[in-house]
Image (cartoon, rainbow, N blue to C red; front, side, top):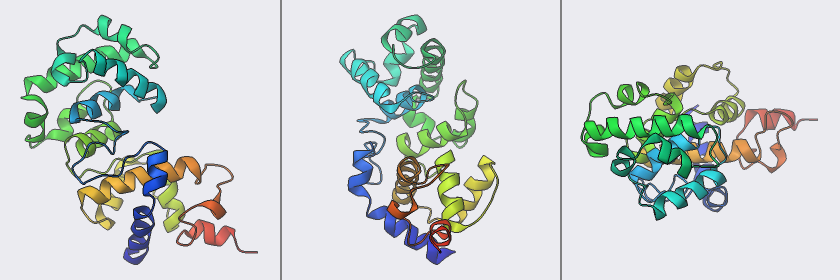
Length: 232
């Protein structure tokens, strides 16, 4: 298992150009640019809420508007009314609900000392999970990409790619996959960011739910599913 994981990580390390083409900017371990070119931890948090059930291209356009208005900072969002914010984020699905949630989240983060105060808390994940609209994947994404805390987000792509590559079935439970992968992967900030970006990219491009493009997939030489399905 460890050997396979190491080979998978080696493949991921070679995906830099492909990751950039799909919106992931491979950078230093503590850089926020991984997250769609985000220029600050604040932008990671803001877009992590906006991107839920919305295409990243739309969120990128909205982020551009927020930058122009100086609303790409948690403190400024906290000072904005949900009604005004909803008008600015037009194009984002469920914009009224997200505006309310984002303003409330921003105000709660400010109340604990901003993102630096949040990062220093012993119960960061619990704090995030107690916020409206923040589920496990969003909480872990904020921790990893905004706060630089090694906490691996688990997406549907993560489950599909690793279940096929490793030939295992852990069901659909979030915690079972998170526990397993954080056990077998090196606990490393760069590796966690690389793994998340890579499985999302491969899951979208090759490891499709139906009729996966195994012959084109970068993981084809290490994937049990691809090796088995390619047999005559």
